[in-house]
Length: 115
Image (cartoon, rainbow, N blue to C red; front, top):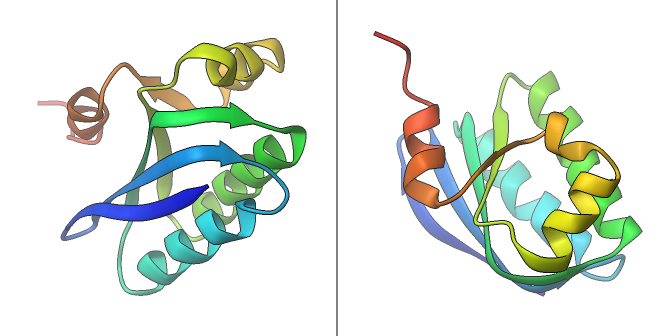
């Protein structure tokens, strides 16, 4: 998996996940997000539009990331989750843990305070 920063706008961070999220690649995601949270990011969107496969270790890493970010006052949301990845999240009932949006723009709007 390749993880890359798509956008950083103040406290909003959009991370792209490409390929597969498994035991060998999960640390990369946690490390990148952790660095940005240390520098002030509070709203994190993981764009999963190019994420094709997720293993149980990858799901564990997302949960670890969710807990760690929540402890730091940050919020993690997933966007563009599809295929086997969304099936795995639903099977494990993690769609109730993570806010999942159909696209990055919808995830971005979900961080805005209600009027």
